[in-house]
Image 1: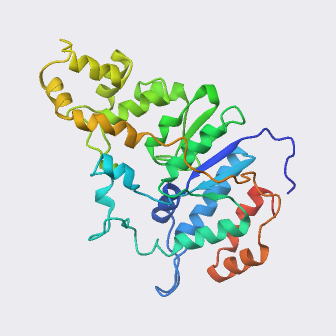
Image 2: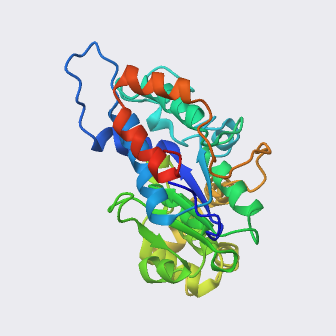
Image 3: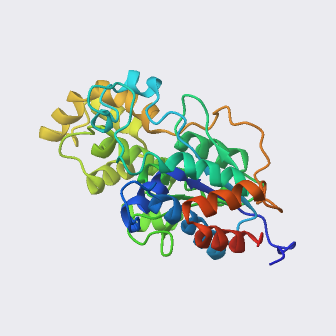
Length: 314
């Protein structure tokens, strides 16, 4: 299928680990023998990309990667950051299902053989790669971020045509599309920055961020709307604002040290050392021989074929 040369430019950024973890748990394991290499995450991830490309018609595409899933600089600020995901006895290794681990290198190999750019940066999470690529493409082309991680809602920016396709409930086929209007409707905040500050107050147990006791989404959004920003709210607390009293004041004061550093932990980087890579969808398969060998060896001819068709490479 020839590529549409007049298609409007659009960049699609994939939070890769978020998607292949979802694929692992959502796609059946069809192995006939436990001695075979599992491929359910690989098959599901390739089909997810095909579905997204078909539905959203990007001209540019990046599989963003966690070169460091738990950067030390974030741990130094909040020591509990992602500690519950550590493998027992390790300070660095992320707990991962045994049947998923061997599939991650296969995902890397297939992406390379197809020619889909995969970008990671030392000491950075995929979120930081996404934040940086989003920012460098401001004013260049619209950007859609695909993720199951609510943290990335902080990137929503109507002025720069940045949306987040959140896969939490509907998956990649029916993601929740977040614009600033959707943020306001769902969370009561009117910008990505407002969402970030709300999430600092609320905390996130999945990332080991405690938040403020007694403050959830609704209260956090109300406080940010009332005071305009997290900094203004904290100034009001420090200044003795009589509207902040009782347990709420006590709880906010008790986590002052956390609130000093948490925004820097939650905020994705916009200045990661992302390499200068052509992120346009490839016009030809990068390594057809390697791709055919991978497909035959692992029985993934069908998902590879669907991906190539979606990319216009069949």
